[in-house]
Image (cartoon, rainbow, N blue to C red):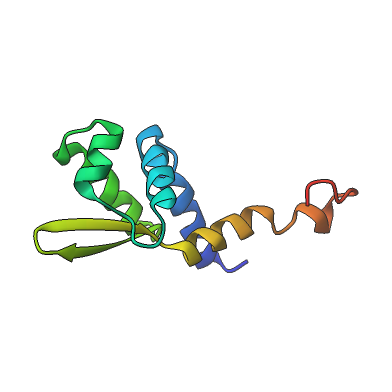
Length: 104
């Protein structure tokens, strides 16, 4: 695996390594391709906007979310291709190197 790709996956896993960001990820993924507004997310995780913005920025910077502005509302949506690439990376050697295919 290319070092840049490995570093990107490490950054993404680091971004997910906080309980709030993991909860936000699950909530936004469940909202689907249109995502959720920052207000909806804040209500779901019960955080003030200033604290939440730090967590959302980390997820956007890691390439796990996209963001868009509609009027005065910020929406965050899952970057499904990026999430898929991360999960594919986590599973890619499961059956190739193991003696069993039970993990697949």
